[in-house]
Image 1 (cartoon, rainbow, N blue to C red):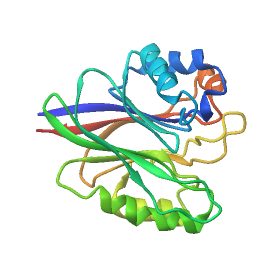
Image 2 (image 1 turned 180 degrees about the vertical axis):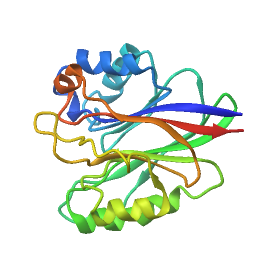
Image 3 (image 1 turned 135 degrees about the vertical axis):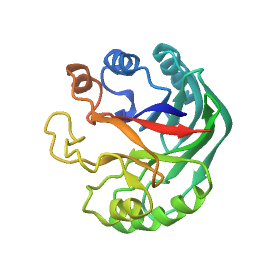
Image 4 (image 1 turned 30 degrees about the vertical axis):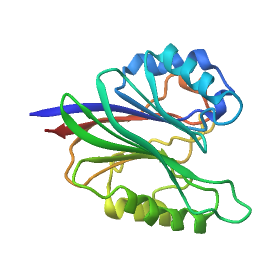
Length: 222
């Protein structure tokens, strides 16, 4: 029997835009897990993250690490959550990933949220560290802002080990005002089924961030 994990991934630009529109978008798709980049991470980040989660009808699982934040519904059982610090590149912003191990209706999964760097060498260097930390026997879902398109070396390296859930859908995710590039993605373990992959393009999305959110349903088995 397959259990479908509904996951939403979104770079929310520090909540500097219309948060009401963001909340309406999240609530409208009723996700089990939300992976955010550029979420609150410094001043009062815990209170701001908790407020956002509450308004979305979700709870905070893990956050604060370089702006990565994972929220979930109460249908998800969290077994473990932590932060993976990625190697620091001189003169670049510190990068990290949030890694959550949980289950939905008894079916286990690992979700990782990441925001890769602005320079190609940094992104390429972080991919093997990230993938190495996600090794295991349960389904893995890696979601985030890759900061490059599918023909870039970091994205290609991810797609060699994981399945790009949106490979057949060229809909751009950035920017909402001038959508030209697909730089936000969801990757899953090889062989894990994915359905209903889509990039959300509603009027609220255009108000809520400069990135479009990506969502998919990932098939899990016990």
